[in-house]
Amino acid sequence: MITPKSPTKTSSKVTTSGTGDLSTEEFRAMGYRLVDWAANYLDTVGTLPVLPPVKPGWVRSQLPPAPPSEAESLADAIADLDRIITPANTHWNHPAFFGYFSITGSMPGILGELVAAAYNVNGMLWKTSPAATELEEVVLGWLRQMLGLPDGWFGIVHDTASVASLCAIAAARESLDLKIREEGMAGRTDLPRLRMYTSEHAHSSIEKGAIVLGLGQQGVRKIPVDSEFRMDAEALEKAIREDIAAGWKPFCVCATVGTTSTTSVDPVPAIAQICKRHHLWLHVDAAYAGSAAILPEKRDILAGCEHADSFVTNPHKWLFTPVDFSAFYTSKPDILRRAFSLVPEYLRTSADEEVKNLMDYGVSLGRRFRAIKFWFVVRAFGVQGLQSRIREHLRLARELAGWIDASPDFERLAPTPFSTVCFRAHPHGLEDGKRLDALNEEVLEKVNATGRAFLSHTKLEGKFTLRLAIGNLRTTEERVRETWALLNECLKQAL
Ligand SMILES: *Cc1c(COP(=O)(O)O)cnc(C)c1O
Image (cartoon, rainbow, N blue to C red; front, side):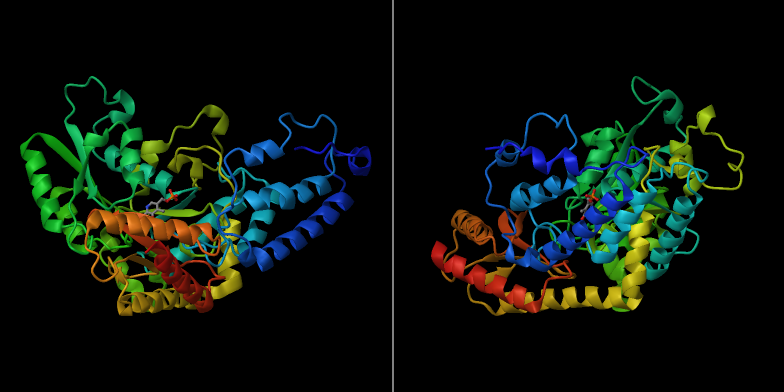
């Protein structure tokens, strides 16, 4: 039920300045209050249920269906955060959020978002914010160095890896010089059917990119994986030869460093050789695991990536930067630009010869000042600080993997190269596949229903697989231990 607002709580408090905006006093008061609110939220988020116990429609039922016609105080909206929004939120900043890929909106990143909103620039052209364009270039240069990627690669920030990979496939297609930009693809008899390759374990965004670009799902050939879920390079070579013989035009391979189900790493050096031999664009999707390459001892996960034509990694996944921040690099910015640049007269500037206008390198014209939050994160933690945090997540995952391996009731279903553990309950004597799937599904539901932890699942070789991903700064060994105990407890109940 919606309680009607008492008139004393509303418009009387709102003072607008001559600008029509809030007065700066009001802004300060609400701003300090919201920083306190956020600090308190982050201090207590670990006590909240990770998954909210709400039914579909509950949030809607708490909100007025029509907008307020008179001004309300922001204080009322802040009160509603606690009353309606927090109780219906899935808490991604919770220390026991282990689903999908666990992430962190760190405090420096949160403050960076505030600054970006205050500037509110649209960085479509260099001229529309030299600072946004050049800070983006600088921080992507920093990240490139941190990951050991080649000097001179061009970088751009996108909202998501999905969009970055779409841009990569578009550039790969543009590199064929088939006049697709001018004439399109439909109805052309002079055009061979284009095909790209990625593993069976690649992220769905690769196929989606191909769908959007008109290549069709049949334009993506999924290459089988080996026993550790890595693309089989020999099978790739064979598929390309078969396709050429059958009249297809292979043009692109997308390798994955850190697949979404198991975080397996495709053999990029071998794939790069195949790409070179057949003149194919090599795109590397390292959305999650790329961040681990900031550790010298993990640098080898990017072996072969120096030969890539394009590469994406998401600092909003495992570098403590709030969603959204996806870093996209290419060694062929001219081709990327050819795929996307379309400049109407009103966006021409006298600086165009000397500068990069980032609107020329992607789909969207407008762009947020995303570089600020990443800049704050890297400065506030330092490279060493980022390294030690990722190292700790790797250690926690190794600990958990050890407990699973030592348990008579659980088994690991994939190697654990990073901080994501794939496993299932498999009590002694229970061998029926269907019953094991049902049992694990039940364990997962029981664990998640407690609100004390949240895990997600995948399917590996037909087996229902539990997936526990560690990536939040607030996750401690204690939390991982508690969750392990909870898994064991829920298994006992389910049996
Ligand atoms: C998470 C993930 C993606 C998708 O990332 P978005 O930024 O949400 O589009 C793509 N590829 C891999 C390997 C991922 O782990």
